[in-house]
Image (cartoon, rainbow, N blue to C red):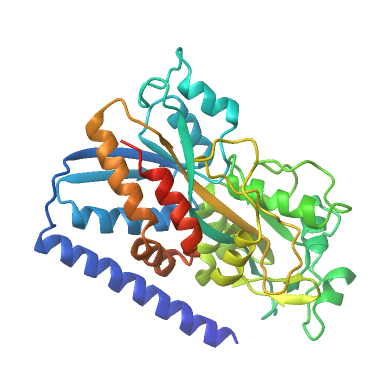
Length: 364
C-alpha cells in the first residue's frame, strides 16, 4: 500500500513539474494580447493558493499586458485588507458579515477601492474538502468519525491505540504512542469550517463554539503549508488542511452514516449541492450555508467553500474592467477544471456558475 502511494505521489510531482514547465514555455512563446492593460492585487485564503496560481497563469496568457498578483496570506488578512481598500479583491473561506459589507458602501467608508455606495459581494468559486493528513507508525489505512476527531482535538483522546480509534479500524495495528494533533496558528477559514463540522456532527464531544482558531496542546503552524510541513516531517501526527494538499499524504477516510467516505472532489461538491444559500443577504451576495452534519450517502461533509470578495463597482474604471474579466475567467468551466486538476478542488456546478456569472455581469 505504501509503495503504491509513493508511486502515485511521484507521478503527481512529475505532472506538476511538467505543467509548470509547459506554462513557462507558453510564456516564453509570447502571451496573447487584449484590450486590457494594468495590474490588480488580491490577498487572502491560502486554501485557494494552488487554484489562484493556475487561474492567474491562464488569465495572463490570454491578456499579455495584465498582471494579477495574489498573496495567500490567509482569509483574515484578505478580508481586512479588502475592507480597508488595500486590494482589488480578497480570497476568503469565511464570509464577511453583512455589517462589514454595509460598511464598505457607507459614506464614511475607508474603502475607496469600491465606488461610493456600491458595496461588495461574495462569489463562491472554490470548493474543497478539508482533509485529515496523518503519519502514524505502521498504519496504512485510517478511518475516523466526527466524535473521534473531536476528542482528538479537544484532548480527551491522547494515544493512537485508544479503544475508540481501535474500534473504528479493525485489522489495523495502532501504536501505543501519543497523538500530536496539528492545528493552524493563524486565524483561518479552514479552521472555522473544521470546527463547524465538529460542532454540527459531534456536538456532545465538541462543546465550544466554532471559531477560526483552536487553542490547545499539540503543535500549531502558519497556513496550510505550515501544517503540511509539520505533518510531513512528524511522527504519529495528524493535521487538517485544504484538500489541495491531499496527494502528498495518507489521509483519513471519514465515517459518515456508517460508511467510509474518502475526501474526493465529487463528495465535496455533493455536500455543497445539499446546502442552501445563507439568508439575510443581498440576492447577488452568494454565501453558502454549509450543512456539515449531513449523513447522506456519498457526501463528504468536512468541506469548505472559498469566496472571492469583490466590489460591485470600482472607483477606477480600468481596475473594474480587469476584475470583471478575471472573475468571468475564474468562474468559467475551463478555469474551474484547470483548478481541479491543479488543486484537487471540485468545479462549481452549472447551476451555481449561472448565479455567479449573473452576479459578475454588472461589475465594472
